[in-house]
Length: 79
Image 1 (cartoon, one colour):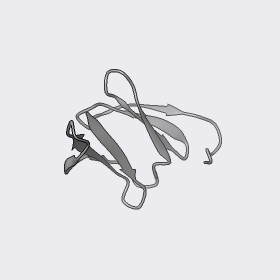
Image 2: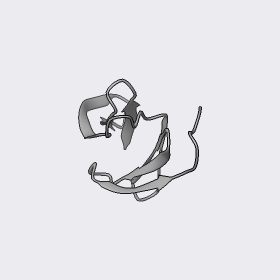
Image 3: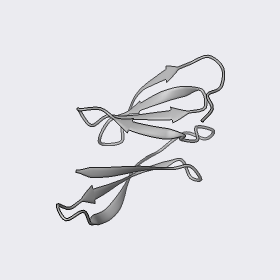
Image 4: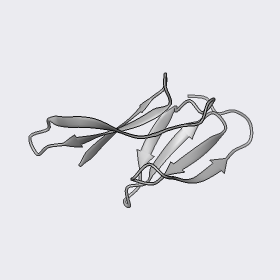
């Protein structure tokens, strides 16, 4: 299992291995989002892909941190 964290201040997506007792392992950087793409939330699908909400799109990131797709939406999203 992995805990994913989107750090808004840096745009970095982090992954932490979760042990069976619930403790966290060392963090690993998956990727850093492009400038201006401040993450507002994340979700994970059954294949492990991350869906990252940013102001003008949802970015899809592979489990290894590689960018897959940007799904734009009109206007600017808000939390």
